[in-house]
Amino acid sequence: MAMSEQLRLLFNITHFFADLGQDFTAAVAPACIILLQTTWPAPVLQPTLASVINALLCLDLKAAAGLRQKDGSPSTTIHKDVVRSLVKVLDRATLEHDEKDLEQGAAPLCTLLRKVYELADGDVRGEMQGLLLPTEHDRRKPLGQGSSISARLLRMCGSPLLPSLRENISNLLYELSDKDPERFVYNVGYGHASGFLLSHNIAVPVDGVSQEIPSSDPVNPVTGQNLAMESDDHDGLPEMTDEEKEREAERLFVLFERLKATGVVDVKNPVEDYRDKQ
Image: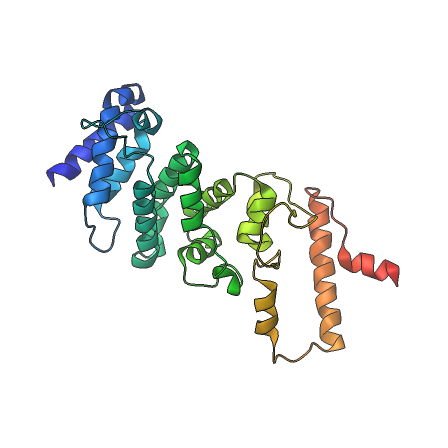
């Protein structure tokens, strides 16, 4: 109880009196140790842990990273163990809390992860990307349909109940993609990426994913699913009738016309292009 109150006091001081934050830089390492060494009960976003996260948000992590501990060892601030612990908390939170609790409880955690990623070196950034972005195993299904943490995050990006958190998660995934629109589309699929890019006036890649982005197998750029797995999913399904194909073509034509009307991207309607060639 006393520790929770001290952390809350630390957050209030550094939040409301930001100019005093540099006087509490030495408190970053103890806060990280609390994060690493405490066994957090379920549901994970308890007041004490929330106070640790909020305190770290308001402290100068960059300055703390340059400090050394009393025994001369490097700071634990921007460290893989801290990253793993924060991601584990996020993983548990998406499993143990209802969406209504996540909207306020998990947003500061996502912001802290974004802050850590910005300050981290290449090794730690790679660790975060490996933990939070979809893996090859995730691509056995359309991205967002599995049970992994990345699938759960992608589903939350489309939840109408999470207006603040879904924006925070989308920003986190975009930053994990090094703010590269093409890499972002590859990492999460065009279906998940396009809304975020358009709403932030970022040009949406219209020529697919660059060959410079490594991929062991070709993927569907819209769903992010491995094309080989996509073929397996469709095995045994009946072929569309000509009438169904025509209805689908008309639906796509309308969708592309609406996209062109926004003026955000200059895209050639593939249905119109096909008809012109007939």
